[in-house]
Length: 121
Image 1 (tube, rainbow, N blue to C red):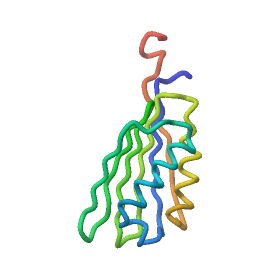
Image 2: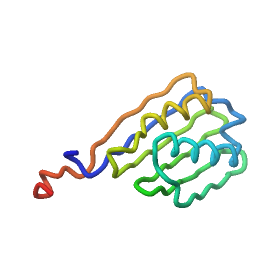
Image 3: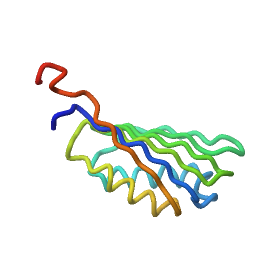
Image 4: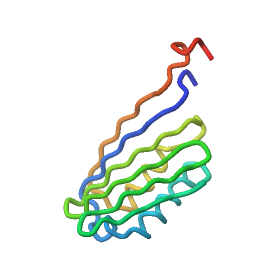
């Protein structure tokens, strides 16, 4: 792996509104997604905002997953940061796409920490 980590940024559109406001559901499916990706959850923290959506984060053995939902818009924003090339974050994205019932999505991947720039470590 020529980089220390990868960061995948994902936007889900047209999501099931009921799912975007259900704090327990969001935590459950994010934990399930981390298992699909092949990583172990260390801890999690989620908070529901009245009439807005949910913010949450999972800290895993080799990554973190962050989420923010906008209920009225049916929109979900996700960050998947991983320092282990064996973690399959893209599988987690596919899993969550189905769980939120998104009709459209976009994703971009950023490689972080170029090893050559760091002295070839």
